[in-house]
Image 1 (cartoon, rainbow over the protein chains, first blue to last red):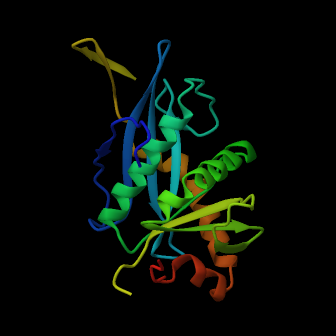
Image 2: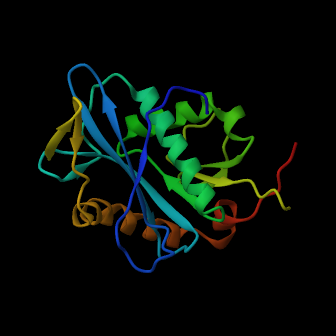
Amino acid sequence: MNDPAYQFEHLFYPVAPADSPFEVYRFFSVSEIRIVQKVVIFSPINQQPLVVNLALMDVLHDGSLSDLTVTNNRDIGVVLATVSNIIADFLVKYPTFTVMFMGSDKRRTSLYNAILIRRLNELTQHYIIVGELDGVPELFRPNQDYDRFYVKLIDQKL
Amino acid sequence: MRSRTINGDLRLEKPTLEAIKQAVQKKVDEANRHLASLPPSELEKITGRIKKTV
């Protein structure tokens, strides 16, 4: 977790119930030509109460959100390190939850796959990383090109 | 969405809850459908407790 990363903040929204794992974080991607507000949203999934969906989105000028824009701030490594830190923060608050995520397109999914491969030794010190390919989840293996990912804390009590 | 400038730093208003919910609803629905389609044995790999091995 030592890669350069942006500072992030937790945004409060009044949603019920109070213990809902619905959480929103934001940070700013900064370059010489633009500042882009990015949000990371953890949304509960009804089907599996202990799984949350992670979405990384840009806030557009009209206030809408998009995960299809290409920011072009040449800071993707910093952005993803920030998201990694945010996931860690979320799992401290909700240690029994599993975070599910995937790219909004194949290019982004492949990028996430590559980042996980690069940081696998570091991440698996604290987390269980599961990759899913064609509906079959398994412990993340570096030689696979998964289409969906899951992250959860290692249960130290077992 | 540019609201103010403080000490030269651009501050941007946070998105509304409505905008957030609208943006993620489709993804959450898809995630619900996807997890519902997985057999219990596969779900266990995702949500089950796993012991740390060294």
